Image (cartoon, one colour):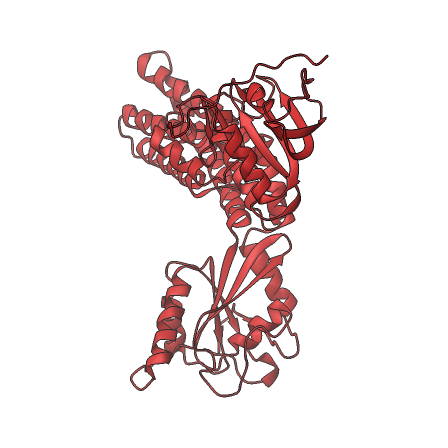
Length: 462
C-alpha cells in the first residue's frame, strides 16, 4: 500500500496568491524540445511537487525517479522527479525539478497547478540565483557568471563564464582585497604609532605601488573578459573608395558587403558577426567619409552620420586609407576616433602607389585582393583585443569592471597623495574607498534595489 503524501490545499478560486518563500518556474526555453523542466525552491517544494506525482511516496535525495504526472486522476505526462534537500542544492533551499516532455502547453499547465497552492508563486527572473547568493551558495560575481554562461556566444566565452562560476575570478579579487587590507592596516599603524614605524612608513609607497599593479592587472583581465562576454566591435571607416567593404569581405571570408568601383557604394552601417579564435566579434562597414559634405545627397549624409556614431562606439576604430591620401585629410579622419582605440591601415597595397602621408612610418599596408599582410592584420587585431581570449578568467560585466576601475582610481589617488607628501590620513581614506569597491564587486554592501536590478536581467527559472 502506498504511503500517504500530505498535499497542500489549493487556494480558493480568485484569491490572490499568498506571499511565501516557495517559488516555481519553467527552467527551460519557451520552444518545443525533447525535455522541459519545472523547478521549485522553498520549504514546500517537495510537498507541492508530489501533488503531481501521487504514486511517488518517499523519494530519495538526488535520485532520478521515473514518475507519472497527474492532476485529480487525469494523466498529464510522464518523466522524472529529482529532489535536492537543503542546504545541498543550487539555492541552498529545498529544490525539486520535474522533468517532463518539452511541450510548452504541458509545462505551463503543470506550473499553473503548482502555483494554485498557498505559499507557492511564480518565480521572478533570476530569483533562484538570487536566493543562492542570499544563502551564501555563491558570491555575486559567481551569480553573474550564471547569466554570462547562459548568454555565451562562443566556446571560449562559455569557458570563461564557467571559470568564474567555479570561483576563479572571486579568488583573485579576494587575494587583491587581502593585500589591500594588509596595506590599510600598515597605513593605519603608521598613523597610530608614528614614533615607532619610521622604516615602515618609508616602505609604504612601494607596498602601495605593488597593490596598485595587482589591481591594474586584474582590471586588464576584466576588460578582456568583458570583450569575451559581450563581444568586440571593430568599425572600418575612412574616405570614400578606400576599399573598406573589400577589406571587410576579406576579413569575414565571404562577400558580406557589396563592392563597386563607384565611390559611395556603402550608404549604411553593415555588420558582420563572427567567432574569431573564441572572441565574439562584429566587423562593421560604414559609409565613406568626405571632406566636403556640401553636395552630397540626404541619404549619403545620413550614412555618414551613422558612420561617425559607429566609430564613437567602437572597441577598435580601423581607419582604412587609400594611397595618396593627403596628410590633412588623414589627421581629420583620426580625430573622429578620439573616444575609441585607433588602428590605421593603408589599403590597396597591390596597386604599387605611394602610401598616404608618404614618409610616415607605422601603419600597415594591406591588400584585400592579393592577401598581402592580411594575416598580420588579423594578428594585430587579435592582440589589440586582448591576445589569447581563451585565457581570460572572467566573463566580466559592466558592473564588475566599473568596480575595478573605481578601485584602481582610488589606489592611484592614494599613490598621488603619498608621492606629494600630503597627510597620510588622505591616503588611508582612498584605500578605504578601494576596499569598498572590491567588496561591491563580490556583492557586499549593495543596496537591495541594485541587487534586484542585477538579477532582473536573468531569465525565468534561473
